[in-house]
Amino acid sequence: MPDRLDLRLRSLTKRYGRTAAVADVDLAIERGRTLALLGPSGCGKSTLLRLIAGLERPDSGTITLAGTDITNLPAQKRAFGVVFQDFALFPHLDVARNVAFGLVEQRRQRAAIAARVAGLLDLVGLAGLGTRRVHQLSGGQQQRVALARALAPEPPVLLLDEPLSNLDENLRQSLAGEIREVLDRVDSYAVYVTHDQVEAFSIAEQVAVMRAGAIRQVGTRDELLDQPRDAWVARFLGHENVWEGEKASRVAEWAGVLLEEGEALLLRSDQVSLLEGEAGRGAVEASVTRVEQRGLQWHLDLAIARWATSVRWNGFAREFSASPAVGDTFMLAVPRRAWRRLAADRAVGRGGGRPRAMASGGRTSDRG
Image (cartoon, rainbow, N blue to C red; front, side, top):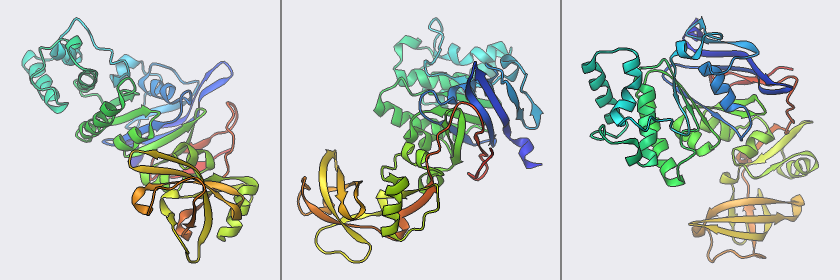
């Protein structure tokens, strides 16, 4: 069967007392592809990574690698590569010897070690820095050393736990692209933990969104942003115009969208536009109640009397003849393609059933 080549988690659960840190998780991760575990702090993503690494034992469920059950295999026998957020480098060793550490443990030939280290330093952009001490490196360079050291023994699985969280924003953005390039050239399973969606979408082909120990949805960037499975996922991914209950029904009636019971309504703000003057069908009058400018972008809160609610609009100055101000009135043009129906925010407790998701094709399903 094709899935025998996957790193596969089945019904994986880990409890601490009455708290389910990981709850009934199913995931399939393909060799040569990177999966990001994305979610807020405390959602269980690092615990799930530690279960995969063998640093924690699950209370129930199984982990298989290429068809072999490794659920109870100790971490040292899994020989997975792990990169932590604090780098965990050896300060008494230079860069080359840090990278070579796992190769020495494997008792490889000295010439083979030197060649492997040189190749990895070149891969991560540190060629010629092998004799530097760790404390002489920048934070970004130290993280590259940690990545090279994890890759050196050619691990079957590479696990990265918030590796960029201790770096400044600009460095994180540039390193995310570099890590993606490195992982694209490595033929192993890679799991990347982060709370930053920009980082997750920059690095991973597939993203699993976690909440309260459960996988809420798995998919590519386009799949997740275009069709979030519920109101919570939509808001977590940055959609600002999500309505539930009576508000959703009222807006949906105006839009001609038929909502079923328990459904929420999403307006894709990137697919609407603000117009000055008259507008045709599918437009509604909007009054500016708040204005914020961030760099080249404008962020406006718009009160819409017809909907008895407000919306958030983001755009650029080129769309206005003059800078917008509180009290200005525009027409909000809303094409039918801008609306999405999705499940309402179903609170997830720390016990009981959980949504189950597979990383194959971004499909999700619920089980009670």
